[in-house]
Amino acid sequence: MSEMSYLEAKKLTLEDYEDFIEDEGFSPSQAIAATFEDSVLMMKKSHKVYVSVMINLSILSLNKNFIPDYLLERQESLSKLEDLNEEEQLAYELDINTLNRLLSNQNFEIDKDEEYRLRVNMLLE
Image 1 (cartoon, rainbow, N blue to C red):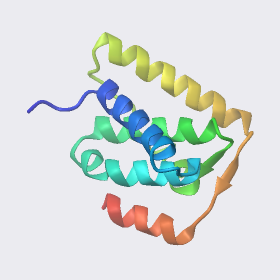
Image 2 (cartoon, helix red, strand yellow):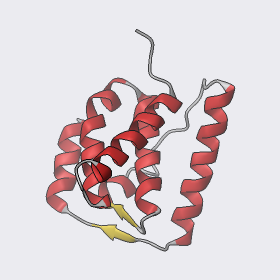
Image 3 (cartoon, rainbow, N blue to C red):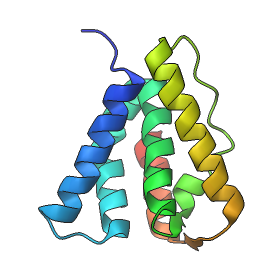
């Protein structure tokens, strides 16, 4: 089985998030956390998936004017993805630019939840 691509991981992340909003009636904050937890196993198996999920969940939350502390604190440590095909590279660069623009606008609140942040740390170990 080949590794999931950046674009496949992005698509799954967006679909999962939308499903939690539309089908489960979750708030954006709840949907971000649920999507994150659904993605943990895939993220632990692939750095490309990890980066895709972290970037795209951050963009989704920032578009709603918040970002969970566990996503924000990992932004600086996300290493640059390499060895992407042309289509993936374009999408990745667009996502990075969007994320950086949203972060630099500083038009968001940081959702702080120490207990959940510890849970995230445990899940990603």
